[in-house]
Length: 141
Image (cartoon, rainbow, N blue to C red; front, side):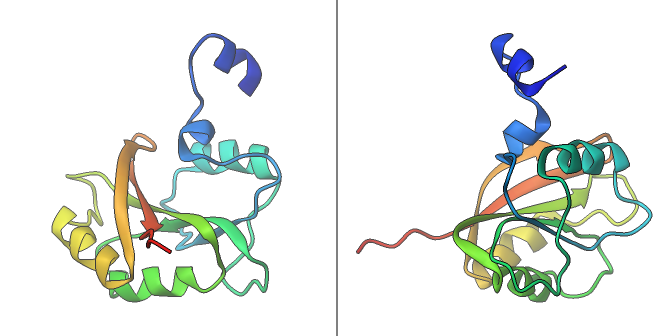
């Protein structure tokens, strides 16, 4: 089913819910053999390819696969910010509760503001993965 057909039925695809549109530049961090391949394939169908962490491009979205034990979450989030566009979004994808590598909500809640971001929403991104949307704080000018 095309995205247009799904939208006509009032059903938004996961790519739509993540705000990922064709032509966007998406960076992926934390890829490993435990990521959800169906989610990746859906997003790759939309954008064509992901750029890696060494890109010189400005990116619209970052898919950050994070697990407990991967190192300091705040450091990983900060690393994701350097190529991020001014209005870009970081999607922190973490294993759901009860799954290996689950990240406690308190760690996410502490790490995002320390990195200069705040949480705006959470979704069920896949059977074993939750997604937390992180964006920069808007300042009055």
